[in-house]
Image (cartoon, rainbow, N blue to C red; front, side, top):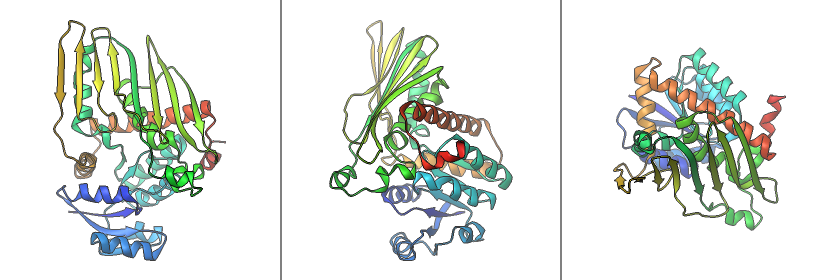
Length: 331
Protein backbone atom coordinates (compact mmCIF):
# COMPACT_ATOMS: atom_id res chain seq x y z
CA UNK A 1 0.00 0.00 0.00
CA UNK A 2 1.42 3.37 -1.08
CA UNK A 3 0.93 6.07 1.57
CA UNK A 4 0.75 9.46 -0.09
CA UNK A 5 0.61 13.09 0.91
CA UNK A 6 -0.91 16.00 -0.97
CA UNK A 7 0.71 19.41 -1.39
CA UNK A 8 -1.95 21.99 -2.16
CA UNK A 9 -5.54 22.39 -1.01
CA UNK A 10 -7.29 23.72 -4.12
CA UNK A 11 -10.24 22.24 -6.01
CA UNK A 12 -7.89 20.23 -8.23
CA UNK A 13 -6.72 18.33 -5.14
CA UNK A 14 -10.33 17.54 -4.25
CA UNK A 15 -10.76 16.11 -7.76
CA UNK A 16 -7.53 14.16 -7.46
CA UNK A 17 -8.61 12.59 -4.18
CA UNK A 18 -11.95 11.61 -5.71
CA UNK A 19 -10.03 9.80 -8.44
CA UNK A 20 -7.54 8.28 -5.97
CA UNK A 21 -10.44 6.72 -4.06
CA UNK A 22 -11.19 4.69 -7.20
CA UNK A 23 -7.64 3.31 -7.38
CA UNK A 24 -6.43 0.32 -5.42
CA UNK A 25 -3.05 0.32 -3.71
CA UNK A 26 -2.79 3.78 -2.17
CA UNK A 27 -4.07 5.67 0.84
CA UNK A 28 -4.19 9.42 1.51
CA UNK A 29 -2.12 9.79 4.68
CA UNK A 30 -1.05 13.42 4.98
CA UNK A 31 -1.67 17.02 3.95
CA UNK A 32 0.93 19.75 3.51
CA UNK A 33 0.14 23.45 3.65
CA UNK A 34 2.16 26.44 4.80
CA UNK A 35 -0.78 27.37 7.03
CA UNK A 36 -1.55 24.95 9.86
CA UNK A 37 -5.23 25.84 9.96
CA UNK A 38 -5.62 25.18 6.25
CA UNK A 39 -3.83 21.85 6.54
CA UNK A 40 -5.96 20.76 9.50
CA UNK A 41 -9.21 21.66 7.76
CA UNK A 42 -8.25 19.87 4.55
CA UNK A 43 -7.01 16.78 6.42
CA UNK A 44 -10.27 16.62 8.37
CA UNK A 45 -12.29 17.00 5.17
CA UNK A 46 -10.51 14.07 3.51
CA UNK A 47 -9.64 11.88 6.48
CA UNK A 48 -5.85 12.25 6.34
CA UNK A 49 -4.02 11.26 9.52
CA UNK A 50 -1.08 13.70 9.45
CA UNK A 51 -0.53 17.36 8.65
CA UNK A 52 2.73 19.11 7.80
CA UNK A 53 3.70 22.76 7.49
CA UNK A 54 7.44 22.16 7.07
CA UNK A 55 8.55 20.81 3.69
CA UNK A 56 11.70 19.11 4.95
CA UNK A 57 9.77 17.40 7.74
CA UNK A 58 7.37 15.96 5.17
CA UNK A 59 10.25 14.84 2.94
CA UNK A 60 11.96 13.05 5.83
CA UNK A 61 8.79 11.44 7.19
CA UNK A 62 8.79 7.64 7.41
CA UNK A 63 4.98 7.70 7.24
CA UNK A 64 4.93 8.82 3.59
CA UNK A 65 5.96 6.98 0.42
CA UNK A 66 4.77 9.37 -2.28
CA UNK A 67 3.51 12.92 -2.84
CA UNK A 68 1.04 14.56 -5.21
CA UNK A 69 2.03 18.19 -5.86
CA UNK A 70 -0.67 20.67 -6.89
CA UNK A 71 0.81 23.96 -5.69
CA UNK A 72 1.42 27.04 -7.88
CA UNK A 73 3.74 26.28 -10.80
CA UNK A 74 6.60 28.32 -9.33
CA UNK A 75 6.67 26.03 -6.27
CA UNK A 76 6.83 22.71 -8.13
CA UNK A 77 10.58 22.47 -8.53
CA UNK A 78 11.60 23.24 -4.95
CA UNK A 79 8.92 20.97 -3.49
CA UNK A 80 9.53 18.10 -5.90
CA UNK A 81 13.32 18.18 -5.49
CA UNK A 82 12.98 18.03 -1.70
CA UNK A 83 10.64 15.04 -1.91
CA UNK A 84 12.58 13.17 -4.60
CA UNK A 85 16.00 13.46 -2.98
CA UNK A 86 14.49 11.77 0.08
CA UNK A 87 13.14 8.92 -2.05
CA UNK A 88 9.52 10.06 -2.20
CA UNK A 89 7.76 9.30 -5.50
CA UNK A 90 6.21 12.42 -7.04
CA UNK A 91 3.20 13.01 -9.26
CA UNK A 92 3.45 16.70 -10.15
CA UNK A 93 0.67 18.73 -11.71
CA UNK A 94 1.20 20.11 -15.19
CA UNK A 95 3.29 21.90 -16.15
CA UNK A 96 5.83 20.06 -14.04
CA UNK A 97 8.08 23.12 -13.75
CA UNK A 98 8.43 26.79 -14.65
CA UNK A 99 11.03 26.03 -17.33
CA UNK A 100 13.21 23.28 -18.76
CA UNK A 101 16.11 24.07 -16.41
CA UNK A 102 13.91 23.40 -13.39
CA UNK A 103 12.67 20.14 -14.89
CA UNK A 104 16.28 19.00 -15.28
CA UNK A 105 16.88 19.66 -11.57
CA UNK A 106 13.81 17.60 -10.72
CA UNK A 107 14.92 14.71 -12.90
CA UNK A 108 18.38 14.70 -11.35
CA UNK A 109 16.81 14.55 -7.88
CA UNK A 110 14.58 11.65 -8.97
CA UNK A 111 17.57 9.73 -10.28
CA UNK A 112 19.64 10.37 -7.15
CA UNK A 113 16.73 9.49 -4.87
CA UNK A 114 15.77 6.45 -6.96
CA UNK A 115 12.19 7.73 -7.06
CA UNK A 116 9.51 8.06 -9.72
CA UNK A 117 8.76 11.52 -11.13
CA UNK A 118 5.67 11.74 -13.35
CA UNK A 119 3.96 14.82 -14.76
CA UNK A 120 0.22 14.83 -14.08
CA UNK A 121 -0.80 15.54 -17.67
CA UNK A 122 -4.04 13.63 -17.20
CA UNK A 123 -5.25 13.75 -20.81
CA UNK A 124 -2.42 11.66 -22.30
CA UNK A 125 -2.78 8.69 -19.96
CA UNK A 126 -6.45 8.02 -20.67
CA UNK A 127 -8.30 5.99 -23.35
CA UNK A 128 -9.22 9.14 -25.27
CA UNK A 129 -5.61 9.94 -26.14
CA UNK A 130 -4.97 6.27 -26.90
CA UNK A 131 -7.81 6.38 -29.44
CA UNK A 132 -6.31 9.45 -31.12
CA UNK A 133 -2.91 7.81 -31.30
CA UNK A 134 -4.27 4.48 -32.58
CA UNK A 135 -6.23 6.05 -35.45
CA UNK A 136 -3.71 8.57 -36.81
CA UNK A 137 -2.51 6.09 -39.45
CA UNK A 138 -5.91 6.31 -41.16
CA UNK A 139 -5.28 9.95 -42.09
CA UNK A 140 -2.24 9.31 -44.26
CA UNK A 141 0.44 11.96 -44.43
CA UNK A 142 -0.28 14.65 -41.84
CA UNK A 143 -0.61 18.18 -43.21
CA UNK A 144 -2.33 20.21 -40.50
CA UNK A 145 -3.08 20.02 -36.76
CA UNK A 146 -5.38 22.37 -34.86
CA UNK A 147 -5.60 21.86 -31.10
CA UNK A 148 -7.91 24.20 -29.17
CA UNK A 149 -8.72 24.63 -25.50
CA UNK A 150 -10.57 27.81 -24.58
CA UNK A 151 -12.25 27.73 -21.18
CA UNK A 152 -13.45 30.81 -19.32
CA UNK A 153 -11.88 30.64 -15.87
CA UNK A 154 -14.16 30.97 -12.86
CA UNK A 155 -11.36 33.05 -11.31
CA UNK A 156 -11.54 35.59 -14.12
CA UNK A 157 -14.72 37.05 -12.63
CA UNK A 158 -12.74 37.98 -9.52
CA UNK A 159 -9.90 39.29 -11.67
CA UNK A 160 -12.31 41.69 -13.34
CA UNK A 161 -13.29 42.91 -9.87
CA UNK A 162 -9.66 43.56 -8.98
CA UNK A 163 -9.16 40.35 -6.96
CA UNK A 164 -6.09 38.59 -8.38
CA UNK A 165 -6.01 34.88 -7.53
CA UNK A 166 -3.05 32.56 -8.09
CA UNK A 167 -4.20 31.42 -11.53
CA UNK A 168 -3.73 34.97 -12.84
CA UNK A 169 -0.41 35.76 -11.14
CA UNK A 170 2.59 35.56 -13.50
CA UNK A 171 5.00 35.76 -10.56
CA UNK A 172 3.82 32.22 -9.74
CA UNK A 173 4.64 31.06 -13.29
CA UNK A 174 0.93 31.03 -14.08
CA UNK A 175 -1.08 32.26 -17.05
CA UNK A 176 -3.06 30.93 -19.98
CA UNK A 177 -0.15 29.25 -21.75
CA UNK A 178 1.08 27.36 -18.69
CA UNK A 179 -2.34 26.47 -17.28
CA UNK A 180 -4.47 25.91 -20.41
CA UNK A 181 -2.19 26.02 -23.43
CA UNK A 182 -0.14 23.14 -22.05
CA UNK A 183 -3.12 20.85 -22.79
CA UNK A 184 -2.52 21.62 -26.47
CA UNK A 185 1.28 21.60 -26.35
CA UNK A 186 1.81 18.26 -24.62
CA UNK A 187 -0.25 16.04 -26.94
CA UNK A 188 1.30 17.81 -29.94
CA UNK A 189 4.88 17.02 -28.91
CA UNK A 190 3.90 13.59 -27.58
CA UNK A 191 2.45 12.61 -30.97
CA UNK A 192 4.77 14.47 -33.33
CA UNK A 193 7.88 15.57 -31.45
CA UNK A 194 9.40 19.05 -31.53
CA UNK A 195 8.68 21.42 -34.43
CA UNK A 196 11.33 23.17 -36.51
CA UNK A 197 10.02 26.63 -35.69
CA UNK A 198 7.59 28.28 -33.26
CA UNK A 199 5.80 31.61 -33.57
CA UNK A 200 3.12 33.00 -31.29
CA UNK A 201 1.17 35.93 -29.91
CA UNK A 202 -0.55 36.52 -26.57
CA UNK A 203 -3.26 38.79 -25.22
CA UNK A 204 -1.99 40.28 -21.96
CA UNK A 205 -4.20 41.49 -19.11
CA UNK A 206 -3.73 44.52 -16.88
CA UNK A 207 -1.27 42.86 -14.49
CA UNK A 208 0.90 41.44 -17.27
CA UNK A 209 -0.45 37.88 -17.23
CA UNK A 210 -1.29 36.25 -20.55
CA UNK A 211 -5.04 35.63 -20.82
CA UNK A 212 -5.10 33.87 -24.18
CA UNK A 213 -2.83 33.09 -27.08
CA UNK A 214 -2.16 31.44 -30.43
CA UNK A 215 0.91 29.45 -31.44
CA UNK A 216 2.00 28.39 -34.92
CA UNK A 217 4.38 25.43 -34.96
CA UNK A 218 6.11 24.55 -38.23
CA UNK A 219 7.01 20.92 -38.97
CA UNK A 220 8.59 19.52 -42.16
CA UNK A 221 5.77 19.65 -44.72
CA UNK A 222 3.00 20.62 -42.32
CA UNK A 223 2.02 22.96 -39.50
CA UNK A 224 0.12 23.06 -36.23
CA UNK A 225 -2.00 25.84 -34.75
CA UNK A 226 -2.67 25.92 -31.01
CA UNK A 227 -5.35 28.21 -29.59
CA UNK A 228 -6.04 28.56 -25.87
CA UNK A 229 -7.76 30.98 -23.52
CA UNK A 230 -8.70 31.54 -19.87
CA UNK A 231 -10.82 34.60 -20.61
CA UNK A 232 -13.20 33.19 -23.25
CA UNK A 233 -14.93 29.88 -23.90
CA UNK A 234 -14.69 28.11 -27.25
CA UNK A 235 -16.65 25.23 -28.71
CA UNK A 236 -14.73 24.47 -31.92
CA UNK A 237 -13.34 20.94 -31.95
CA UNK A 238 -9.68 20.10 -32.39
CA UNK A 239 -8.67 18.47 -35.66
CA UNK A 240 -5.88 16.58 -37.38
CA UNK A 241 -5.88 16.70 -41.18
CA UNK A 242 -4.07 14.25 -43.41
CA UNK A 243 -3.99 13.55 -47.12
CA UNK A 244 -6.34 10.56 -46.70
CA UNK A 245 -8.75 12.02 -44.18
CA UNK A 246 -9.33 14.13 -41.10
CA UNK A 247 -9.93 13.44 -37.42
CA UNK A 248 -12.18 15.62 -35.29
CA UNK A 249 -11.53 15.52 -31.54
CA UNK A 250 -14.31 16.69 -29.23
CA UNK A 251 -12.05 17.89 -26.37
CA UNK A 252 -8.28 17.73 -26.47
CA UNK A 253 -8.02 17.82 -22.65
CA UNK A 254 -10.59 15.06 -22.06
CA UNK A 255 -11.33 13.23 -25.30
CA UNK A 256 -14.53 11.18 -25.31
CA UNK A 257 -15.35 11.15 -29.02
CA UNK A 258 -13.33 11.24 -32.22
CA UNK A 259 -14.75 11.31 -35.73
CA UNK A 260 -12.78 10.07 -38.74
CA UNK A 261 -13.72 11.56 -42.11
CA UNK A 262 -11.98 9.54 -44.82
CA UNK A 263 -11.42 11.04 -48.27
CA UNK A 264 -13.49 8.19 -49.72
CA UNK A 265 -16.55 9.61 -47.96
CA UNK A 266 -16.60 7.10 -45.13
CA UNK A 267 -17.36 8.58 -41.68
CA UNK A 268 -16.51 6.72 -38.50
CA UNK A 269 -17.62 7.99 -35.08
CA UNK A 270 -15.66 6.47 -32.20
CA UNK A 271 -17.07 6.90 -28.69
CA UNK A 272 -14.56 6.33 -25.90
CA UNK A 273 -15.96 4.86 -22.65
CA UNK A 274 -13.95 5.89 -19.63
CA UNK A 275 -14.15 7.12 -16.06
CA UNK A 276 -15.95 10.42 -15.51
CA UNK A 277 -12.92 11.71 -13.62
CA UNK A 278 -10.03 11.03 -15.99
CA UNK A 279 -7.40 11.74 -13.33
CA UNK A 280 -7.86 8.05 -12.49
CA UNK A 281 -5.62 7.04 -15.38
CA UNK A 282 -2.61 9.16 -14.42
CA UNK A 283 -2.85 7.82 -10.86
CA UNK A 284 -2.95 4.21 -12.04
CA UNK A 285 0.06 4.79 -14.28
CA UNK A 286 1.95 6.46 -11.42
CA UNK A 287 1.26 3.42 -9.25
CA UNK A 288 2.35 1.07 -12.02
CA UNK A 289 5.66 2.89 -12.39
CA UNK A 290 6.23 2.85 -8.63
CA UNK A 291 5.48 -0.85 -8.37
CA UNK A 292 7.58 -1.64 -11.44
CA UNK A 293 10.52 0.18 -9.80
CA UNK A 294 12.51 0.05 -13.04
CA UNK A 295 12.47 2.33 -16.07
CA UNK A 296 10.44 0.86 -18.92
CA UNK A 297 9.56 1.94 -22.46
CA UNK A 298 6.53 3.94 -21.35
CA UNK A 299 8.46 5.87 -18.72
CA UNK A 300 10.97 6.89 -21.40
CA UNK A 301 8.10 8.13 -23.61
CA UNK A 302 6.65 10.15 -20.71
CA UNK A 303 10.04 11.64 -19.89
CA UNK A 304 10.70 12.66 -23.48
CA UNK A 305 7.22 14.20 -23.88
CA UNK A 306 7.50 16.24 -20.68
CA UNK A 307 10.98 17.40 -21.68
CA UNK A 308 9.77 18.45 -25.13
CA UNK A 309 6.76 20.16 -23.59
CA UNK A 310 8.94 22.32 -21.33
CA UNK A 311 11.33 23.12 -24.19
CA UNK A 312 8.35 24.11 -26.39
CA UNK A 313 6.88 26.29 -23.62
CA UNK A 314 10.22 28.03 -23.09
CA UNK A 315 10.55 28.79 -26.80
CA UNK A 316 6.93 29.95 -27.08
CA UNK A 317 7.27 32.23 -24.05
CA UNK A 318 10.43 33.74 -25.51
CA UNK A 319 8.56 34.52 -28.74
CA UNK A 320 5.55 35.98 -26.91
CA UNK A 321 7.42 37.94 -24.26
CA UNK A 322 6.23 35.90 -21.27
CA UNK A 323 8.83 35.93 -18.48
CA UNK A 324 8.68 34.60 -14.94
CA UNK A 325 10.84 35.32 -11.88
CA UNK A 326 11.89 31.66 -12.03
CA UNK A 327 13.56 32.37 -15.38
CA UNK A 328 16.39 34.15 -13.57
CA UNK A 329 17.99 30.71 -13.44
CA UNK A 330 18.14 30.71 -17.23
CA UNK A 331 20.61 33.61 -17.18
